[in-house]
Image (tube, rainbow, N blue to C red; front, side):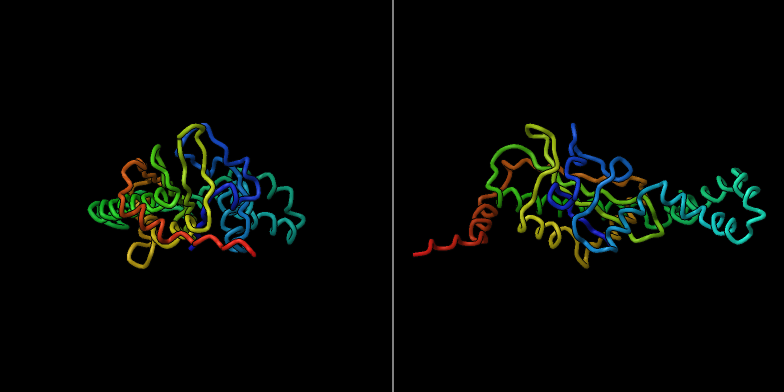
Length: 234
């Protein structure tokens, strides 16, 4: 299951993440190149590219033209058949019909999943705000998932803000670890959220947090958890 922490530091083309408003939708809007994450993640990100999916759907036509060269011209001049194949591949192979999406879970179950997302998002945002020692302004946790149903779910997790210039924020190692460990686990999985999103046909979820609401306990915990500075060499 592909979860990618999206920051200017985790992509090879950070300028692509620049935005004039938040929450910033990324999938199907911009092309980004993940830094690291392995070939599986890169392949999954590329799979979101519609022209590439069209090529995959039409690959049988290409293969047929190489096998039966005398039929290459008639095959290449069959746009209706190609459109039908693309439509079938996109709507039946990769996606679910509204009826099937509605059967993934009940409305009450979907509401519980989204309530859990909001609760965990606020918990994570509180910890990150305390870690940053931020006492004013808003932080926004944004989780965007792929609309494709029958492939490994792709989930982009980012921290965004409208304070000053709207932007996707950079995250240090501690903040990235918090997003990876505290947002999803065995009790609340990426697939749970994806099923709820498929049912609701909504794939961008965001939660805003006023950093003035961070408790003193959370700020103290962040101070105690902060690595101590190394002593200067003698």
